[in-house]
Amino acid sequence: MDLLLSPPGFWQPELSIGVQAAIRGCYGVLLLLTLALVAPQAKRFLLSERWGGYGQDLPSVNIVQNPICMPLIFAAWVTSAVCLICGQYTAAAAALNLIFSRYFFVAMRWKGCLRGFGAPGFMTYWLAMVVFLIEFTTHYAQDQRPLAVLVGQVDFAFIMLSAGVYKLTAGYAQNNGMEYGMVNPQWGYWWKFFQKMPPQSPLFQFLNFNAWFQEILAAVLMLIPETRFLGGMIILLSFVFIATQIRLGVLCEVVITCCFLFFHPGSAGERFLNWATTFIPGAHFPTEQTVLLATAQPVQFSSPVVGTLMMAYLVILPLAHAGLFYNFYSKKPLPQLLQVALEKYTNFFGIIIWRVFSADHTNFFPQIYQVEKSGSGKTHISRYGWQGGLRFNNVGESIALTCLFTTLKYYASNQDLFNERLLRYARTLPCREDCVLVFEYNSIKKESGCFSPQVVAKYIVDTRTNSVEEILLDKDFSVHATSPNSPVAEGIRPGSYVRLGSS
Image (cartoon, rainbow, N blue to C red):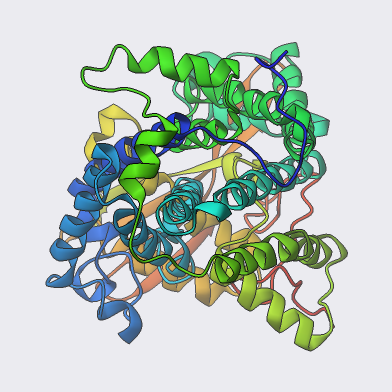
């Protein structure tokens, strides 16, 4: 039973040095791949608006995201990924990567069109934090290493629990969720095939049920010591399937790597990783004794201090999630001091309600055209997938466009915010002087036997006059309405789940 059931005991989870090396190495490879995908888009993704990028033109952004710092940061980031892969200077490399990940994937979430690279950025940052904690404690506070592993396991379980509960309450239980991503050309690999299927297909009903049920079940299993491995495997296998259906960059692979945290010594997962490394020249699972000798440091940090900080995070974690859920579902704030503390704490550590792939994000897609002002010519810009080249095949571009138009739903009364974001994005697109940019809002509607995308609104953008014209083509459709069953209400500001007008 050791193959499937973890040893009992909540506070001392076991993680072999070999699995730790696999997590670190796989994460390094995925980080390097992420940076390789970012490289052709670096001008937009890593610079501020002042130099043609997606970041806001703010002093705090410009001092980092400028043409001088950008290549230096990118080179250092690549170096940290290589060190993690090679197992050299791992604590320092993990710390450097954590700094960069926290800045671009968390701090920039509300300061740029890219929205911190969305869910792929969020999980890349989260695993960066876990890798750092485990590598740091291995080198400098070895008696706290089990607590570092526990922090990672519990935190991941709460992420999945949050995601599962949200899906349950956001329409998945009513068969209103997964199918939109699969039929959406912006996200799905096989959208042409799935668009021809009836919306009430048993396949979609099965996938929607499993999407929320598996995440909740897995989260519960991951919090029970003996069933940790089983919970991790449920998430791992589900994301293996998602990787074959949805264009998400390396998000699925990062989540799969996160699941290695639950591979206890002697488990089927650890044995598989050990077997898999035999096919990589020069790779091997290091022994505990080898690593302890290699990581013995003359300077040891105060273990009680390190342990106290991690324990404090662990204790506050469920309270933070409870506070976010209270804001979101009751649509009310906590008492002022508690609310301020909650938002500062969760925004600093990047703790969120993981709302990835809800219908609000996937039941529409924008198309962009360059149109001559005379009306005689029209060029399609946003060809999604490989036919769109490097830009519109990149998941970051889909995230930027989707989050741009969800502003209409999540901040319905703030049209100026949408117009400002739309203009900022439009300035990064090629457009001749005799042309304007037209953004078509395509709503995916469920017909009796298929899915039917329909253009319901157009936004004509002229970056030379800084003007945005909205043309509504379907009077029965509102671009400001959330999807049926969605619990989302307009927020008071980005970074808060408190409802506008609540007190």
